[in-house]
Length: 139
Ligand SMILES: [Zn+2]
Image (cartoon, rainbow, N blue to C red; front, side, top):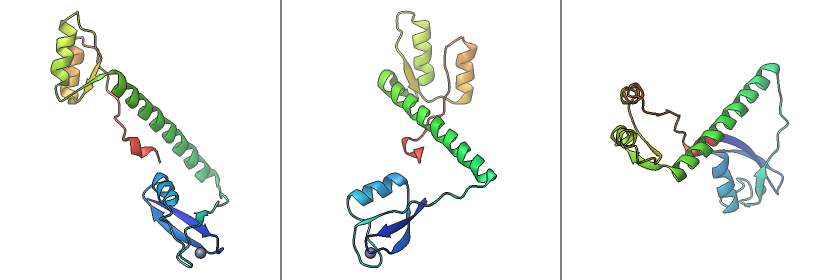
């Protein structure tokens, strides 16, 4: 959840909660955000002067870093979804059949427990685990 202070063309400000900044943008573009004072949909986000202490500065840096990491993971996920075949729960079997059948060299992705993964690694099969981020967790 994210709280924005909104300002209306009637100059009044009010606060409202949104599930994400994206949701806010969608609602705003559909003119679904209305001023609580005059019912106008001509509202916008107020730009608040950031108040930073040394501590909050560090938190912001950390969040930014987190955001970047998430973004890269999302991009990576998209890349994998585009270039690899999703085999879902059949991942361990499929990974084995690709490994032992030297002719096949397709890329796959799917689910495996950590136990299954370490079995595959023990067998010399090239697997890697990565955090499967939610595309919507970028906010
Ligand atoms: Zn208003």
